[in-house]
Amino acid sequence: PHLRPRWRGRRNHFFPFLFIVRNSTSLFLVMGLSVALKMTVRWFEVDNERKELAKAKSEAELQNLKNQINPHFLLNTLN
Image (cartoon, rainbow, N blue to C red; front, side, top):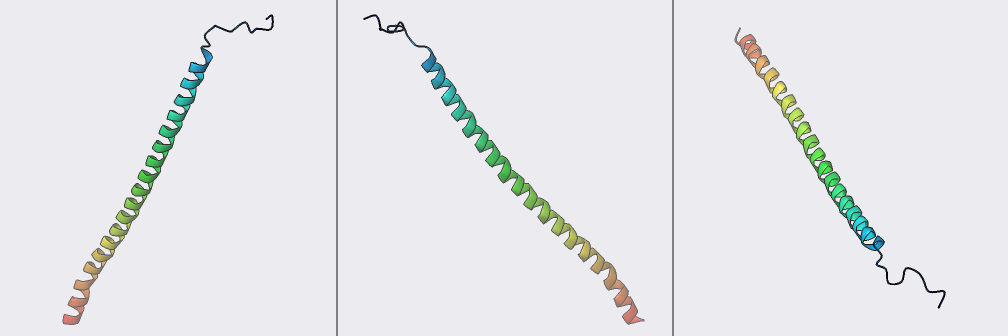
């Protein structure tokens, strides 16, 4: 009788707050992980593209040097 809790019959507003905080935290965690994953994938794509462009540039420079040398050999063999 006299040990009855005082809060009995009162509505507790703390539990809905915890529900919102828990769900918001989960939402932001999932969103953060998905953004981090997408940024990582994009970084690898850009890095691979940069490497391919550097390789293509090197091959083009090598081909350009070969094209510059070929006429000189041709001219020297004709003389």
